[in-house]
Image: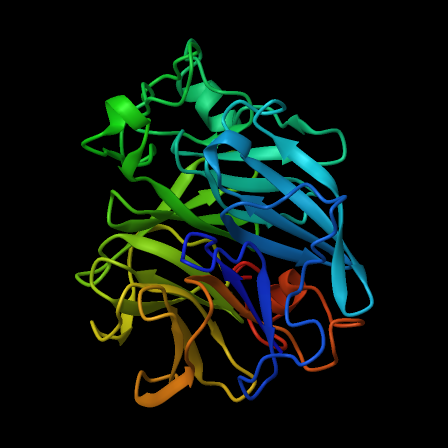
Length: 358
């Protein structure tokens, strides 16, 4: 079964997650995963999501209502169970893009408009402590509560009056301001996809044309994954012990085999699909071992072999622009393992993301 989160910005404005059978046909009963109950806090511009047991966490990217919501499994659908964290709880969370849960129980969120990755304690709706490495390296520095990974440029339009300290690259994340940033508070390039794997946090540094690897416990940068085709990385997915990277700037997918020991230094990814994608977004490894890639502008999902050979269009004519794509084992929604457990163990199919992709 395939889950596709829609951007909610197309003509149809589908602020939900579409459900498709393994063969790519829409699920006949309950084609949308999230129950649109009037009692639910409405989603607007949903982004990354992570399934943990019976709980689905999803990022809502609308700047005026930035939050992460929790949905609870009920039969074949998920029903709204409340807001886990919002800007009023953690000031750094403005325009969240991706979300993952670590084995430590903390919720990790990449926040585009503050260009940070924050750690949150979901049960109490509070930010975790600022990263140990940042506190040691910059003892007098000001950081937004919950900051695990900081921005190379702290003074950004949406950070408010409490301006964070600049953290020089490579430890800090690169950022490019939009030409209208002064008016609309937007950034052109900022932090994007994240995934936690083996006590390390992998972060797509869109402006830095690299994927950075941080220690989850300390926030210290330990490695950088680069390559000629890694331009504007956006989406990340771990399948087994392989990290897949979607590079929007080159229309490519790359892969990096994660070692059993700690990744360290400057690392290089290999090319899987070289420049043949139109605005690629989410992607996942399917039950047949093939690579499935969603394209925003064409509103379709394409199929490739694991070596990058074209196998045609898998799903066409999506009702809205796709953002995240994951595969869930065909046991039906009920009883399926969490996306995180599939990704970490390498069994089943990877997500993001979310499952993260994950």
